[in-house]
Length: 196
Image 1 (tube, one colour):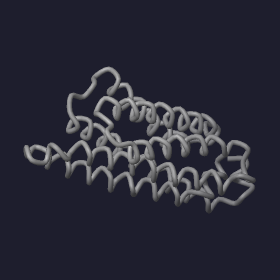
Image 2 (cartoon, one colour):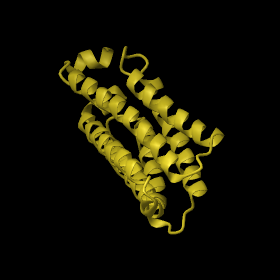
Image 3 (cartoon, one colour):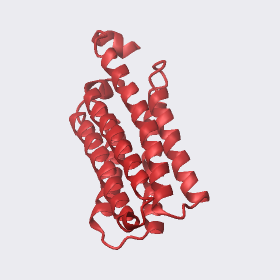
Image 4 (cartoon, rainbow, N blue to C red):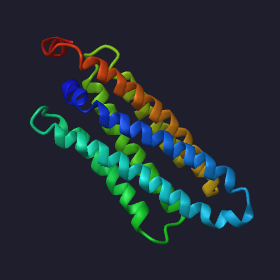
């Protein structure tokens, strides 16, 4: 599993960079929705932002899984993670007339599905000291976001956008740290990686 991730470290960099850009855009939008005229478009913008976040994150993860078909028997974990994110993003982008409650339910399902896949991947890396913590933290962030949205249902798109942006920034930092850790491991000789 570690070698699978090492070969695809740059896809995690892309995922992290997109997460940072999404968070910046979401925080910018959040500051704009205080204006009454912009509140009408804030929910549509929230759906678009979340849809693109999930879709592109899923595409990068599916790309990592496809590149690893013949290299690791647990490539399917990445595939499920990526397909779940792609499906969620596609629904948020393609289904007209979603209300806030429905969007929050979609985000919660996405958070729990992707979080479970990332925790399972982190558990596979537990033999490799220090490698699993970044993914485990990202997964915990997803579960926290999902639990928050379940137990404290935000009343408006502005609050939902705020929490989604905070999670995305936290996740992007962990994914980028994980990617650069993987890149540093790529320099370790092949036999050393097998026994690491």
